[in-house]
Length: 328
Ligand SMILES: Nc1ncnc2c1ncn2[C@@H]1O[C@H](COP(=O)(O)OP(=O)(O)OP(=O)(O)O)[C@@H](O)[C@H]1O
Ligand SMILES: [Mg+2]
Image 1 (tube, rainbow, N blue to C red):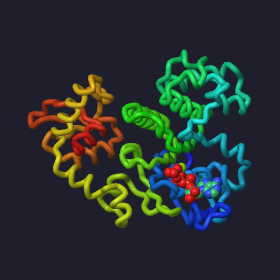
Image 2 (image 1 turned 90 degrees about the vertical axis):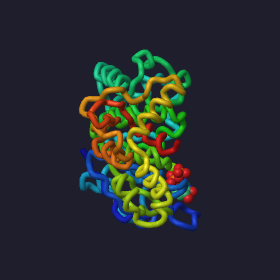
Image 3 (image 1 turned 90 degrees about the horizontal axis):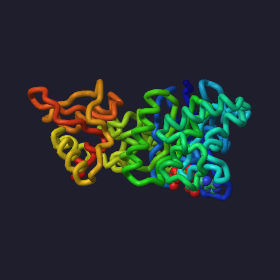
Image 4 (image 1 turned 60 degrees about the vertical axis):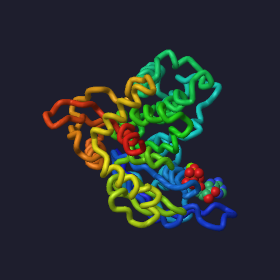
């Protein structure tokens, strides 16, 4: 567990007219996933790189569990922080196993322990053990991203920084990787800062969303609060809050079941969401998707069970089905 406190940080790159970060503060509680959301160039990557000291701030400070990161040698700090990026950044000349083992090797773990850890991580991110001996170029983009996540988790860091880690994959695989990240997070409870500019991805993954604009954090709140109580017009329009809420309010949970079935038959795919989930929240078919979404976000479950007036199960719907229902 490790809380991150970013206090009044500023950063200006040499030669640029305006600062990349301007008096930026953000507190990420231990064990929570905060999504940094915002338009291109607003400073998301810069903020992440300050946390693991790939960059130094001009002013302000960053604390991890109350310790100023500036007082820690960067290599020691980075051992406690996993970093996964959009371009994945795997070493092309190393096998998947060796890529995942990068940090444990640096830490001088013995071979048996490293082998066991690599096996455990491949399983955690849903890759076959046989991938261990393959090279990055022999994997699909999505598989490479899983290896990137496994590598970031290798030394069991308390903190994960993820910079658009699912940016390069198709929407179907992206949804699956998001589900896997949520499942991993339910199990491991890391402190995660996850960068994206995809609003749907933010709503789906975040315990809290921090929306940035021009080097500042505009609002840091739970997803539903961002939608229902946007601080200003920028937040409202960036999240398309009015539109999403209006449609959620007038669409019933039953329509999400229909949307799910239609999508399943059209795509000839089994739903990503398993059909029966123990302990999933239950909503009535007549409930609005707005309350269904609130239940889904609150429970952190992958899906809801929808029942009719007699309590008969009509189906299970996940975030994607809710999204499809309001978009169709
Ligand atoms: N090394 C650098 N030298 C000069 N300017 C930089 C450097 N890195 C970033 N910047 C500038 O700082 C600002 C913030 O960049 P940053 O990469 O943090 O944005 P971002 O929010 O991650 O954007 P994106 O969503 O496109 O990845 C931008 O105006 C960018 O051009
Ligand atoms: Mg970026």
